Image (cartoon, rainbow, N blue to C red; front, side, top):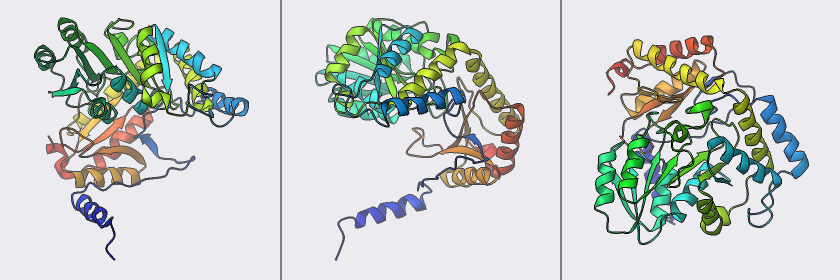
Amino acid sequence: MTSVFDWLDTRADERRRAGLARRLRPRRPDSDLLDLAGNDYLGLARDKRVAGAAAAATLRWGAGSTGSRLVTGTTELHTELEHELAAFCGTQAALVFSSGFTANLGAVTALSGKGSAIVTDAYLHASLIDGCRLSRADVAVVGHADPAAVAHALRTRRTERALVVTDSVFSVDGDLAPLPELVAACRAHGAALVVDDAHGLGVLGPGGRGAVADAGLSGEPDVVTTITLSKALGAQGGAVLGPRRVIKHLVDSARSFIFDTGLAPASTAAALTALGVLREEPELATRVRSTALSLAERLRAAGLTVTEPAAAVVSVLAPSPELAVRWADDCRAAGVWVGCFRPPSVPDQVSRLRLTARADLTEGDVDRAVDVITRCAPPEAGAAS
């Protein structure tokens, strides 16, 4: 009998032939691979202070938060973390979500809706794209990092309310959004700005306070920032930061907050402790940026096509999806784990290796990474564009 899911096999075959099939790769706790694929920018995920705080919170509060934040899921740890995040980033208030993805969904959907307009960058993260799709707003997608196109879309909209949505540091190539120009366009045309600072927090700005702080926009009444706790802070979860009335509105209206189980106590305590480490050791942010620049310069000198990193992400272009997969597999076999980004994960349809610098990488680690990546590069890699 024909199965109703036979079409899945057809799609799987199509992805395999195109070099776009994906697979899960479980890692061991004692792996000797040099990790340039994860997002642990400050090297805090295994920091004894951070991991110890997570373990202690689990013993005190339990393995889970036991309910949604509006029922039993809000612990004293959540409230303290929100206070500390707002104070660190210079905003009136913060709201912690179970992930960066749900934070973005909540912010975009609750601050837009039917009868409003959203203008987005073409290279937006998938979580923001999904938020726009769920918003029921009129959505205009404009060219990458193009404030003039944003201004035109705002000027020609047919709705009273409008929202401009962008990443601060774009996750594929690691380039920076023109935040001062975007906020100027918003103010000229009566729009609010939502910035996903997932890749900026802990890396950019004074003491690692993020790209929004670096642009001088912290605490502005028309700017909302979303962050993740799973990158520079080495934990899990996400948050929205901004004016107090915005945060109160999210508590009342954001479905990904209201109907989701609260962030586990372990992750909450880990993020809180990691934030304290960043306060005490602001040089971590400087170190990760320096490491990213070193990686990019040395790989470019070896003849590879490498983007200029604005933060911790370094992108190395590959000739094709198939060669990108083979290149990443060869690097892994040689002891270096790199990210492999292919369509549809990349908006420009160009495959690449995606490397992430960390503050705890040594000069020897960088030497090893450069040697392996260049040695495993396919001959066509130097001509990738």
